[in-house]
Length: 138
Image (cartoon, rainbow, N blue to C red; front, side, top):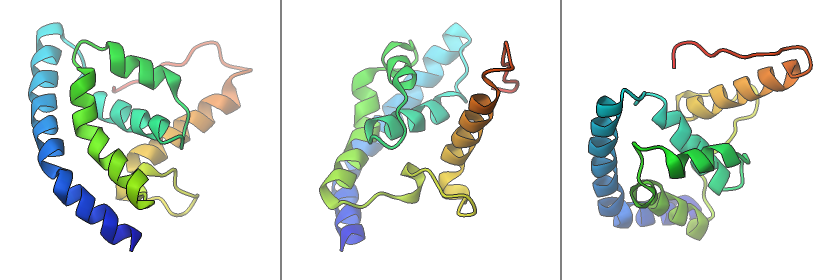
């Protein structure tokens, strides 16, 4: 029943989400090209922000970046993620891509979160012995 309620709410709110996503994409690409910013880093940041908002994985740095990056507008961020977040809260259902997977349950739906958790653990294990971290390819 929770999944059904979630899906109904997502369908009803999809015009907001789709319009927000279209505006978000056009704005982000335009600003990123003008200012030579990475557009590929925005998707993982967006998921980190949503995990933070849901209380699944605290990440105040992601929340601050979502407010301050020139390629993002806070109201548009909410148009893209807000309806799904509201549907999750109202239905009590959380899709797999908004969860931190247990070891062995990783899949394409939670790939970004799995990668985030992998880097979190790797950095936490090395904090006492590493002076600098360089992440290539972002």
